[in-house]
Amino acid sequence: MILKGEKIMLRPVELSDLDRLLNINDEEVRQYLLSVFPLNRIREEEWIRNLYSNQRDIVFAVVPLETNQLVGTTGLHSIDWVNRCAEFGIAITDKNFWNQGLGTEATRLTLKYAFEYLNLNRVQLRVYDYNPRAIHVYEKCGFVKEGVLRKARYLKGEYHDVIVMGVLAQEYFAWCNASRSR
Image (cartoon, rainbow, N blue to C red; front, side, top):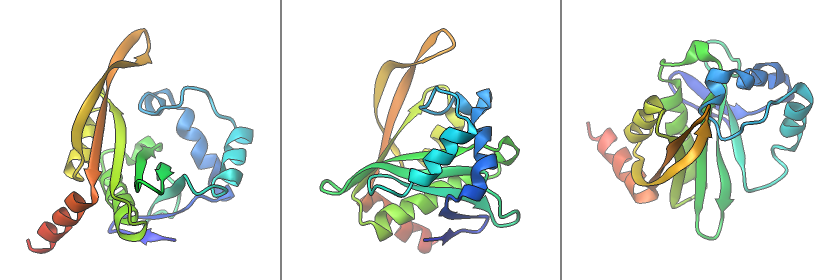
């Protein structure tokens, strides 16, 4: 499936994206991600090859329409098909594309896929307290703060809070209806 927005499209990750995925090792990018281990070509290729082998994780490449090259990934993880919920994740790993609204659009498109195509009832995420840009994007896309995991993230000698946020299908559809009536 391919989802198109105004600036980007979400499409499946391909082996041809491998080189562009490796910028995930950049320290500035990495500080916002759950993963702490370095990744090399072998591990990333293995990840791509196994990406679509289960039905608990769905990952899309974030691709600007103007360049048609991967600048990050977004997805739904640990999908619980009984309780209709998933964990949202996103990483714009090419820093040249930060602060251009691509993360906001990718988040909205992923939520559209979650609620309008997969019929999920809840999407949640975890974000670090030192990432105000991401928190702002998530709030703009309808996520609400649900709780704090105190001092649950260790980075460079300090512990940080992890904020848990979520959005429900009814909130998403209410937001969509409100947007259409403007």
